[in-house]
Length: 285
Length: 238
Image (cartoon, rainbow over all chains, first blue to last red; front, side, top):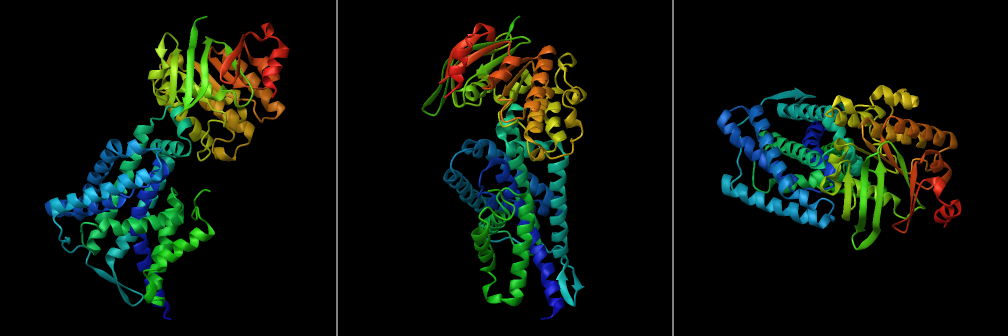
């Protein structure tokens, strides 16, 4: 086997991993703080793609549209948290799944009403390519890797160096003590959900230059986000990063070595981790 | 001395379980009151009831000059002037010692300067050990250090009433002695303290008054010297 081909596939795998990471970081962050398994995270990803498209039509500036799209999704997420999700904190998981799946159906239909059912593409962006290991690599793959690493660093900074991040970590580990220390749980849960939704929206916008936006696109990514989140350990940001890399790389190398079973590889990895370490690589028992 | 906390005919419930039955007690300014009883008789539930951490509560809980604590959510009680150190320590193990303390410092910054009795340097005077471990993760501290950090966090809220659950539980005798000295210093600074504990020798060294609780009811109360030692021991043995 050509080593250059393996190295090239590794880069592609890391680029895919960064998209999985960006989406699943929001999902696992939200779960870590609120203990709600949010199926609607995929719908927020879809909304991020559509809002980015609409803002791009207005501004012709992709980065600005990406940011504005994610901000609008964050506000929608905060509205959902205050109006609906906050009412099911502490209830059994089936309540969470029914409510958040209901949101998925609602947002899918709203997208059909406002943007139509036909998949929408963004005008070509980042169409350049570079030669890596004798092969043509889309330059957007490098942007994705950069975005993923940048988001990891921002998350690290927010959670370890800001008062908000420290308070989020406090209420995550002991809500009662946090409340008795004067921390307002409603504010922290709402802002955490908002931030998780922002990351989902960002993921949707980042996906646009390599694919199209369509109603229901969130259902595909949410399955991958759940695989990444469960392998990494529910609620573990570090776990989501490592797990996204694992999934992205085995998918990419799988396409090279065992192309007939590439689709099954993430599920095989998930089963293997659940058998050996049910709480996930960085999860707590 | 005026009253800082008054419970009148307080009942608490977890679901259909009735846990506290008509609890009435009072903590006055600058005194140490101990809620004394065995494990599982309702001490922690009483403290959690005061903090509003129990799902259903009836009766009256008043703070200072008539503030109805039942109408105030738990997170607002810290700013109101109530510090709470739960029985598991009241620390965040995933944060550093300093980050733990900073959460309390931030809450008390909004208070007027006259109520800022405890600043970081005062807390380090009380607990010199903590000063050398500010960058350590709180989860790596020993049981005694965790207890000290929990009390330090409570003090940095600059409360008028500090509630401490089982401060002597599971600690070595020398650490218990340190905790006794700290509680005496807290009282002398003018802060009222409500402690729940079952260690009679410890309680004898700190309590101005005690309430003996059993099966969710107050059975006896008064200064320790007024109460029969035999009866006290009967309530503390299984």
